[in-house]
Image (tube, rainbow, N blue to C red; front, side):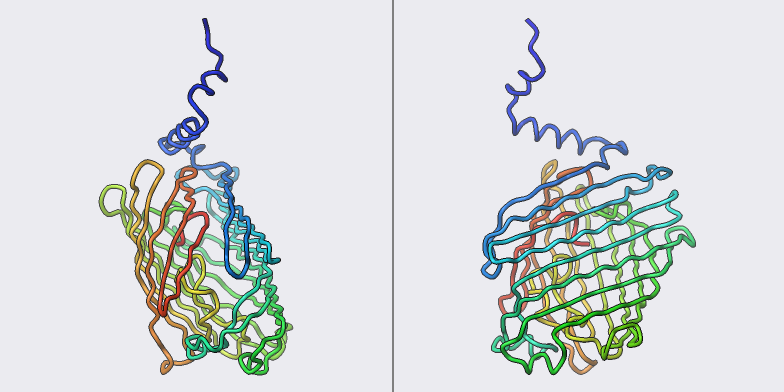
Length: 360
């Protein structure tokens, strides 16, 4: 008697079938295993946003003319909606074109959220009496088109657009007379040096990023003309078996008169994890972190990190903010990790972060 394939699948069980599929995918070394679509979602709860449902997805692909050992292009998306009218949509695409002669990086972010606002500068963020509610809508789009000018070195133009709208604030003095509606248009130049093996899950290499963006008043920026310098340096080293040590340093400097919405904001899902995004905001920011990434068993891993950062107006207003945390990794596909991080910082700041791909 011959047993039908679907009968064998039922006898094996649903979960064992899924686990076997994942394990087989991770063991493969070919180009096909590193490309494809991955989607996962689930419920969550937050005291401000209420009950919600989030979905994250990742699509890794190779454009015609690009083949291994080049890393695949990558498109990732995260969408969220909750019972208290909070919603967000984030999409990011890193495209490698024409055998890596060109790279096109694009980010789109839209969100409507009940938020907290402490005002500007470190001293206001530290004072919890300044904490007021604010509903904010934010839309942001930026893109750069990079030309390869040497092995691992890319340069090209950068475009940035951003819109922020907030409701009235209970303590008007915190906004310091600025408008609650802000539009910003910027153009500039990006320079990247990138030797990472995979953008979504680097195991070796270096990433150096520099961008200089101009937001002049004559380009519809109103009273808030300024110039932004963005720096990032990341390095990845293999340690012992299954272990990667990753370090990331960032700096953001705004010269001129950035508005409350375009100041450097400390804390997000990729940097200074655990701090409330926007509690600490000022003209400039510097951060640094070292992270140990350890594979535990097949498609399961964990990370620990430690670091710190600061936001500041000038050299006399720097205050160190520590940051540390732990996280779990689930290799949903080859070089695509679902991550759950718990980060914490100064004065009891902490948060869970759910996302896709590594933080940096």
